[in-house]
Image (cartoon, rainbow, N blue to C red; front, top):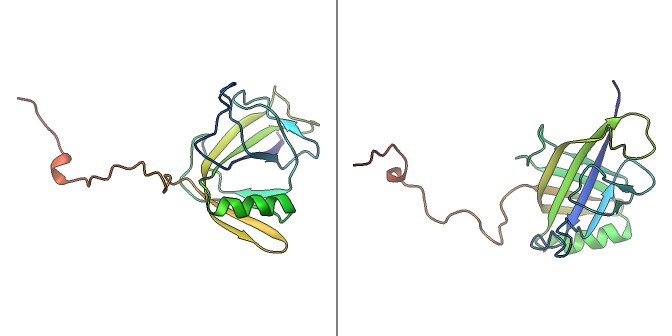
Length: 167
């Protein structure tokens, strides 16, 4: 069987404000899809509203599950004005990127809710951004936010590891 493969990309300028306070749905600063020339609604993901306009971009680094991956993720797109501006702001920001890899049966003019399926989702932060006259490049890493540490600061000592038997 043949499939159409597409990527839906969500960019959040501030990772602390991912959800709309009224609807509770994800509310990205910007979002795009790289397959259909006309804006698409990701009808199979009820956690987000709105349409994804077309942007020609490449996405590389999806894992084999719908959960977060551990490798870097690469997004390459044309260096058009608002993408360059957004990238310059993202370099020093606390950004979040969610990329969804979607497949569906071949031959539809839009997302088909009966056959479309999210097969992988990557969630991470822009770690490195490159801009030149032709293209922008984002290297996205799933690492824990460096500005707001989420790892316990205490070292793991050997007395914390082992089997303990109660008395």
